[in-house]
Image 1 (cartoon, rainbow, N blue to C red):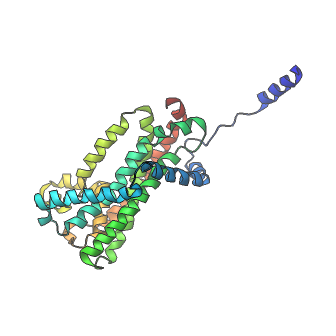
Image 2 (cartoon, rainbow, N blue to C red; image 1 turned 45 degrees about the horizontal axis):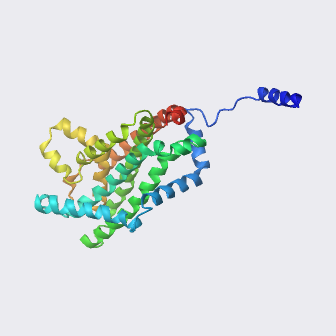
Length: 298
């Protein structure tokens, strides 16, 4: 019996150690692993959506109720009481289109930041490409974005009939893509940072609030252009979130004149999109280098 045990230990000693996963800088390997686990990614997205409204009587109806209530508050308080609608025609469409796109960004960043810590039980038990957890937050946010987009389209039809169907509607695609790229980059970076510094998710809540008011959602870009000095306006307009929201306004807000937008908006969107891809690559590399100690830190 002892000889059999000794032989087994000898064979084990001769086996080479094979690291789980891929090297930290292997971006192609990371994409392949995520694609190989795409069914699990789909299950995680479904789990996130179901758990969010698991014990709710209205369920997914809250996906509509919350933005509609928010729209009503902004429209009545800011538009009617404070008079913002006098400066911005079709104020309801203007506000709701900005809130819809910014809601996608804020949900991806906030949920993605907490995704690794909240899935600590899975991370400790099995190996999976860790990027799956922030990407599941992206998928759940896209579902909610799609529901709100249907409401926005319905509101646009009620406001201006089918006049909103025009060439500018194509701005929807680069604007949404810019938000997805930058939000995913931030989600990966902040998800890794949150493992080592748990205050990060609370800091993100504050930053998301500040970024909303630093974006032309409840006020127009032209208001900033008429008051801000040149260097500050350039800095403000270079913000990818600002450009994406302006592109979304151009797609759905039919009352906006050309003066409401900076020059060469489409080119600016392409530039910040390319820069965002570089930022996404860098954030993924940082995430990959930090993920080795996730299980121990959690």
